[in-house]
Image 1: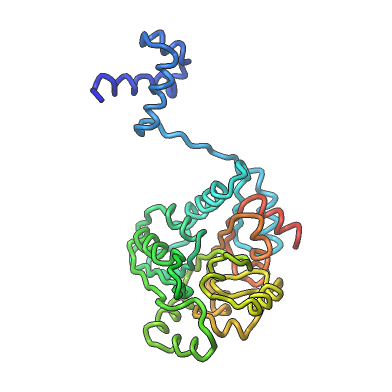
Image 2 (image 1 turned 120 degrees about the vertical axis):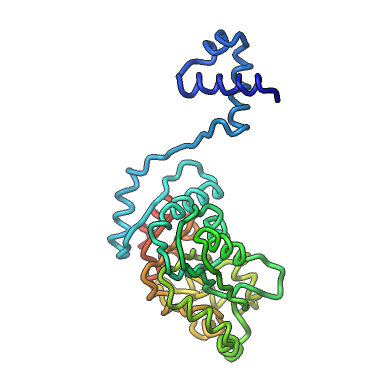
Length: 313
């Protein structure tokens, strides 16, 4: 595109967006049709000369946020208004709110423990650069299996590492194994134990929740038998970092939890700043169980999910 055309696109964009001129008036001034003005404005957006964002008023969520903080003893709750009823848009909006808050929580020389999954992958892609030194990012729960199933654990670790210019430590182990003896043997390995110990003593933990459903990432990783899954589904309301919880937030099945390769649920509760990010009203049971269990200090969820959590509490 020649320089003259680029300059015209810039002139039209400035007249429309900065000077408030109508498309007809711009057309007369430039001696072009109104439809050409519209096309040039579109060109300006496509070429990056104009960036359009929709800012949503957050003040009307204050009552819901206060109710969540009061009921569950949270340090902060951020509820994203439901503007477009699209799951991907809702998830992106919730994660954008969480990403904007993290720079105030992640400090230099801190240890950041992160889980994996679709929500954490979305969040990781929205992280702003943070000028930090000495930060360690560590994986909370194992995420490998016999299936070629992408949990997003590596991409999440790398994105957090890059955002803070720190070091990352991967928990190179399955999420769940066949029995407690195998789990204990894996966790006794010096390299695995070092990662788990680091995660259990983190300054900040960042995770989401999972539904108890066929097709969930944890379901695919475990390879449940029908009878085992039926039992877990009956006992559990959701999972946090591969730990299935009942409605009160306690371990739903301690025998099953003994097979999990991850930082312990009790140690995760003791992390000073716990960040829970979730989207979608179908996560209400899992979010409520996590809140009842003390797995959140900072909560980032959408409006529909927040209302369902409060209504059913």
